Length: 271
Image (cartoon, rainbow, N blue to C red; front, side, top):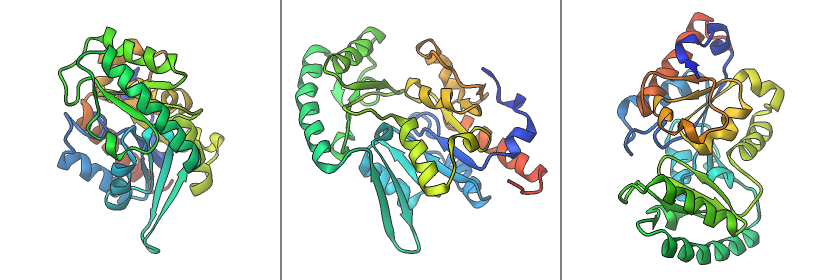
């Protein structure tokens, strides 16, 4: 991982789309700081497409799509995207599977939840679980005492033994039934809503993240950035981001936003 400061200005000036994880990438210790929110707002006002790509639940994503300075949001690790049309006052929703399949998946996850909590003492259902439509989030450090890595791995194994996908974030293990992830739904969103195909994305999209569930994004986008706290989880990553910030969490996101805004200014606002 190279320092973010080594990203060529010409490459930064070509960025049109800023994709970013939320927890411990835009937020810091669970808090959205004024500086990080201002960075989102400045990017949006400058004409960047700003799209959070998160493991957080549908209920949160509805709020984010409506009230944050963003153009869309991908939630629950790719189960859906939401895009709010402010002029029409309408929420556009796209899910990976239909409502009937989501209900079947939720029933399977409900049984799996009890198995995981029985076999991994100290784990808990994430506090945001009631607002989820497609996945099960098991908390290993957000609102519980941090679990050892071996217990996090055990949670992952229990999901996988049941035929579910499982991804580790900085706070949760998220599990779901389905052949999607953050990347697959982001590809659909970029193509269908903004006309950006995979070839175009190589030079006009940048992604920021901090944990193993961001790995598909780090692998897919040549312009990928880890905030500094990714160093603590780097041993869990087969594919690391191309660049890393000096600042941790939200400070790192502010650092990235400043670099992009400066590069666009140097290019005379061209994209």
